Length: 206
Image (tube, rainbow, N blue to C red; front, side):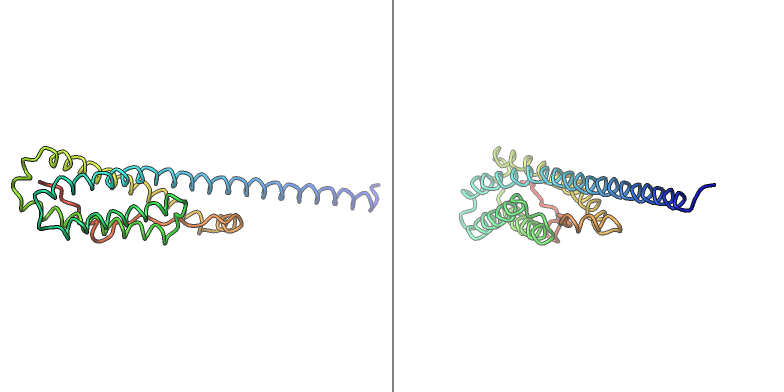
C-alpha cells in the first residue's frame, strides 16, 4: 500500500514538472514574440532605406533643375529660392530619421517637409511651363525623366514601408505581444504618409 508521504511526493514532482513546463513554454513564447517584433522592426527599417535612397536622389536632382532653369527665369528668384529652402528643410528632416529617430513625430516632420518640397516644386514647374525655350533644353528634358522616375519609386517604396510599419505597430499594440514590446522598449514607428501637397503629384512636364 502506498503511503501518504509517497503520494504527496509524487504529487509534488508532478506539480514541479507541470510548473517547469509552463515556465519553459512561457520562455519559448517570450523569445519567439521578441524575435518576431525585432524582425518586423528590421523589415520596416530596411523598407525605409529604399525611401531614403530615392529621397536623396531627388534632393540631388533639385539643384541641377534650379541651375538649369534659372538662366531662363531671372525674374523668378523668390520661387527658385523657395525650392532650395524647402529642399534644405527636407534634407534636414531626413537626416533626423537617418539618425535613428523613426517615431511618429519625426516621420510626420519628414512627411511634412517632403510635402512642402513637393509644393515648392509644383510652383516652380508651373512657372517653367511658361518658358517655351525650356522645352528644347536637353538637360531639362533629362531632369524631367529622372524626377518622374524618382517620384514613382518614392511612391512605391513609401507603400512598402507603410505596410511594414503597420504590421510592426499592430504587433506592438495587440495583447499579449504588447507586453513584450513594453518590456523591451520596442516602440511604434511612424508612417510616411502623403501630405495634401504630395497627393497632388508633381508635374514635371517641360
